[in-house]
Amino acid sequence: MEIAQLAATAAEEKKAQDVTVLDIRGLSVFADYFVVCHGNSQTQVQAIVNGIKEKVAELNLPLKGIEGYQDARWVLIDLGDVVVHVFHKDEREFYGLERLWGDAQQVQVQ
Image (tube, rainbow, N blue to C red; front, side, top):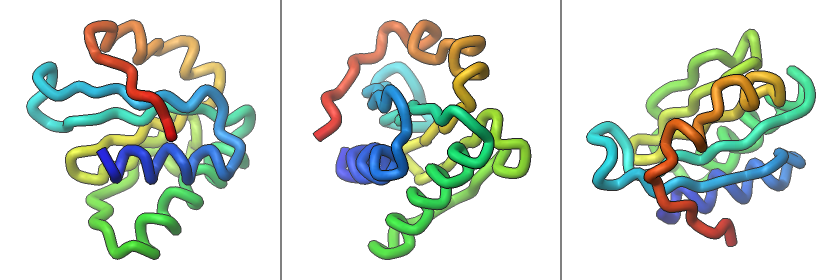
């Protein structure tokens, strides 16, 4: 949970919109938490991703991979038990991860 909170806070520091943490333990075998947020432009999406990468590097936490950075429409950051989804606003509305994972409990971002 600490890593999810850290990623959510780093995203908020880059003005990410509608930051949500979903507890998917018991619903998924590949992760315990999703952090979902969006930016209003490709530049902002990339800035959010960079902010999360920097915070993770500062604390020497494992960063397993990043997908989608170049297009900045839906970027996945694999932090092991935490997967961060940084969307462009339009893609977030279209894919509706919160609806797809509707059984997941939303965790308050601190």
